[in-house]
Length: 281
Picture 1 (cartoon, rainbow, N blue to C red):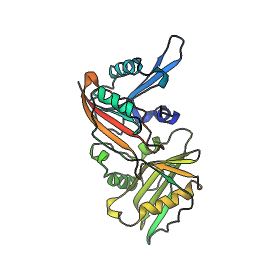
Picture 2: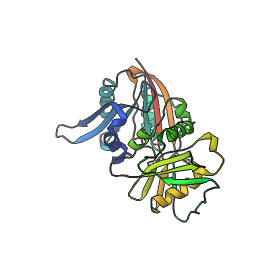
Picture 3: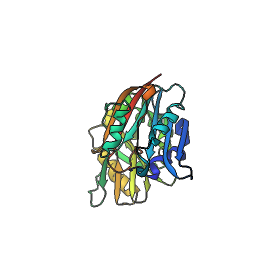
Picture 4: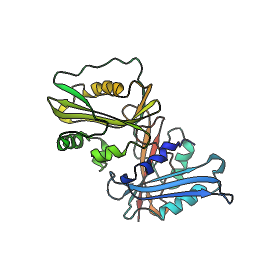
């Protein structure tokens, strides 16, 4: 299946991001792993929303492993859960069909992209714009940067309550990744930010945003150029800043709630689709 180590590892390398984290493993009588499942409430998510991740080894599909994991996880959902979010890859129709079988329907599409960083032109900052490398997100005017970060979140997820502050951004870089951050200022005022982490030859972007008051000035392009230099021109960048994936949201009774998922962490490479479901007590 599509899941890789970092898809699940960051749940444990950034535990401060989650409440009520439950991890379950399905094994055979000899102790061999058949599948894994996780549920938790991300602290940056709207109230009542939890994720559900279930992955079963191909050789053990259609044997009730996923169904057993789902039932066990639904019984252990974080207190107050009303919505479940899960994910499947866009080229994994079997997992999507299983989500439908469990009572979910598609309601949201999201986008993920991959950009080659070789031989790209270097953008020059517009007049009055300065760029600052902030890998630790430590600045002299944190309150001003926090205000800019909040204002920059005009995406549909933010309207639903998915909001980040600097502390939550820091936690999105998993153990073993090298953090990379660039802050753009216009006449000294925080105007835009991008943040992510480097692992191997890939830069995964957790978040990029521009204060609406400063949009239309080419700040995103300028920060991408500086970001490439900050990461010493590694060969690839993968991040949710272009096009290429699908995210879906759905409604289902809690008794059938849950969604199979080999979901990707923000910025991981590959095509991904997420299926979200509303679980009603």
